[in-house]
Each structure stands twice: as C-alpha cells, then as structure tokens.
Image (cartoon, one colour):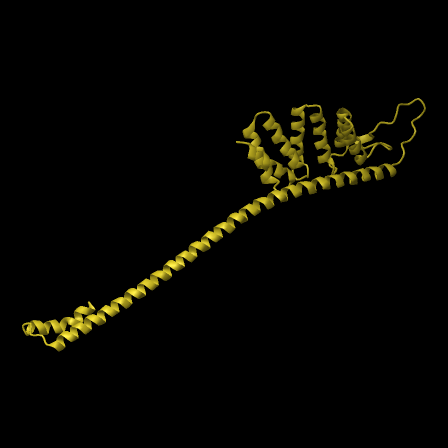
Length: 266
C-alpha cells in the first residue's frame, strides 16, 4: 500500500507523458523501491524477533510447568510417605499409652485395696458376706471397681476367660457409669473371642460402639466388627464398616488399620 502511494505520481507522470520518463523519474522510483524494501526487511526482522521472544517465553513456561509437575509428584510421594509414617507412629504412641494406662490402672487398684475397710466378721454359723450389699452397692470388704477390673483382665491373661467374664460382668453391673466401663465391656468381648465365640464377641464389641461411641475403645470395637464381617465373607458390609471407622475416628490407630484393610478389598 505504501509503495503504491509513493509510486502513484510517478506512474501518473509516465502514463500522462506517454512513457517519456526522465532519468530523474527512474531514480525516484528506484529510491522508493529501495526504501520500501528496507522497511519490509526491518518489519520482517522485528516480527522474527518478536516470534523468537514468544517461542522463548513458551519454552520457559513449559520448563516451569515441567519442573512444577515434577515437584508436585515428589510432594505427593512425600505426603503419602509422611502419612504412612504418621499412622505408624500414632499406633506406636497409642500402644505405649495403653501400656501406661494399664500401669496406672494397676496402681489405682492397689491403692483402692489398701484404703478399703476390712469386711466385718460374719456371726458364728452364718454364711460368708456377699460381694454386693443392698441396692447393688458393693459390701464392705468387697473388691472395688478398679480391683474388679484388674481381676477380670488378669483372669483373661491367665487363660481363664469364664472367670474374667464373671468379674467384668460384676463390674458392669455395679459400676455402669464408671470411666472404665467401655474397657470392661471391650474385655468382656475378648473373653468370648478367646473361646472362639465370634458371634457373641462381635455383639459385645458393637455394644461398646453403640453405648460408648466417644470412648477410646469405640474405634477399635467398630474395627473388630469389620473384621468379623470380613471373615464371615460379608466383604461389602465390612468395607462400609471400615469406611465408617476412617470417617468417624480418623485420628485413631484403628483408622489406619481400617485404611489398610480397605486397600485389600475389591
């Protein structure tokens, strides 16, 4: 377009004079052509440089995206590793805490026995004093809640589940609101599990979950229910229970165990 404007007068002169163009007219045309060619070359050079900058920018962006993707992939791997290690550490801490709680419980039972009043001697020829007094309260000299709990757990560890169940049942009857009630009910389920009465054990574990849903034993009891369902071939129900453990007790050690079980189920 610019070339046409510049050569317009010259062409008009040439046409008007019947091709009698002078040497100066030809020089003007050549100059205009040279200028136009230079401008086009400069424009091409500018466009080429601009294109080179765009290509360089796109290359830099691609390199940045590639680097970010690599870092994100490493981050995902690190997070998975950290979560696994966190779960393992949480389980170990809870196991250690359980040991500490057992030691504390034994100390409470020992202090309870030392502070307990001796039972009165029965009259000559009468029967022994019962373990419970009027209204279900423990009679004087009868084991207190901590002692009953320890007796029940010790009997289980010694291989006498029936004796342990009797002590734990007495505990739950006399002290249903005691802070150890969830543990007592959980160990009561263990007595059935030792005897391989899985149905009774599962029913008792579900009582732990339904009666004491906020207790420390609730998550483990619900997880045991999932194991019972899985071992019974009811995998779909077991999967739903494991998912409930993860959802309701995500910070508990049982949740990590439930996640591992979920990975093995279809």
